[in-house]
Image (cartoon, rainbow, N blue to C red; front, side, top):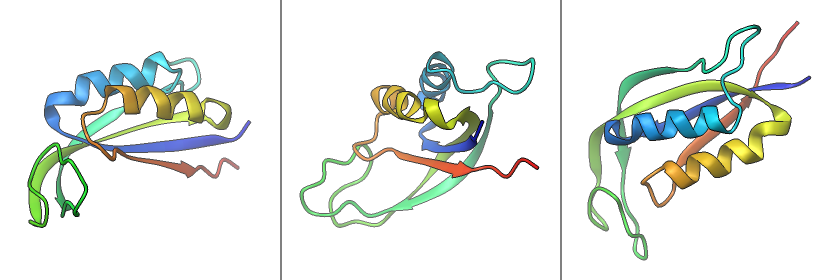
Length: 105
């Protein structure tokens, strides 16, 4: 069964909601363990373009701010449900959610 690493950038205020959404959608299973994830602080950079409705910042202005990176894993078959759950819990207009294939020899 193919597995994916999930990476999500989210403001610290919404970390718990995003992690709960991940786990509710089935992400975070590692062997005999459930609800596995990690979180750490990062600095994000973004510039809202015309037509956007930014959660943080203003159109045309480059912004640098503290965010958190949430990581977990899921099976390929769970990816769509995980993506939908995270987007529903995430405050950003364009949530950054990466699914990366894992090599498991």
